[in-house]
Image (cartoon, rainbow, N blue to C red; front, side, top):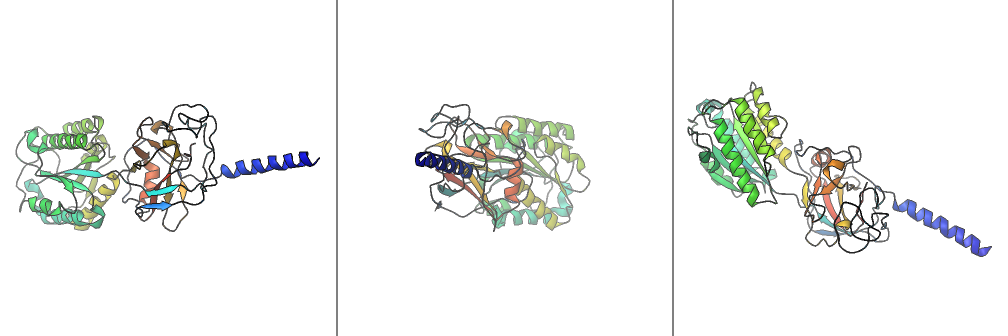
Length: 383
């Protein structure tokens, strides 16, 4: 009788342990879109922090979460190889595992700006250049890579694929960019070759800096005119930039409230719609540029170099003054859960980056003082 009672108690204990191990937290919402639309990014402290106790680790089911180093994704056998999302760890995952926390290292953002310096810009040239200078020197822009070229009279694409100021990191590059602006704008509006050249330069830069995200920003106060440029032809250039390899998104800043036709260029360039502002308002111009920077910043994080097992990696988000939540791993972009959110690796077989999708990324950006951490050492939390 005593042996039977002990056996029953041990079974209850195992059941309670399993129940505790399956409790956890997730962060809601994601989508298949690549570009975020909020205005600021979540940041965190620096360095490595030590986790809590390491006594709550959950072992995997059919997908397996133990064994040697392996890829993530696909199906796996017991105790090794790979994790099959949905068949391994319990949903939500343990927050008591501990592990080592590293401030998430965001993918660097580089921006090639094609700036309209046609004669029509004269009435608001001072307010536009002052707002751009303010953007360059803002503390939030530190670390951003920016390059610059202007409209001209030439229809030669090569004129615009050669930067006036090559992409370099702010704030160090700010003086060179500011000094490049002419005293008065006197050029034309050859928007099609100008944008085509901008995309070409950005693509070359992206190829040489594969770990960066590179975008084009088109700043203009008028619709395309010279060099057979039209809104449809420029829209086609933006579409080719976004659909090509590597993909180059085009952001559009329209200086004039009537420039709604510019929305089609931004949409084709993968950035939804143009930012249309009153060119007489320096405040509105600066705010739009800040919005574009925030929108372009990716929720795309480097896998820590000392990672030994991609099946023991998680992402935690801690809002300012709030409780930490752990995102779920969904395997790939197509499997992103619109309710529970999630993240996935850039390459499940040889991962180097952790990608969080748009709506979850928006949650991060709405809390600029929040913290995003990559946690190593705990079994990956899968849906």
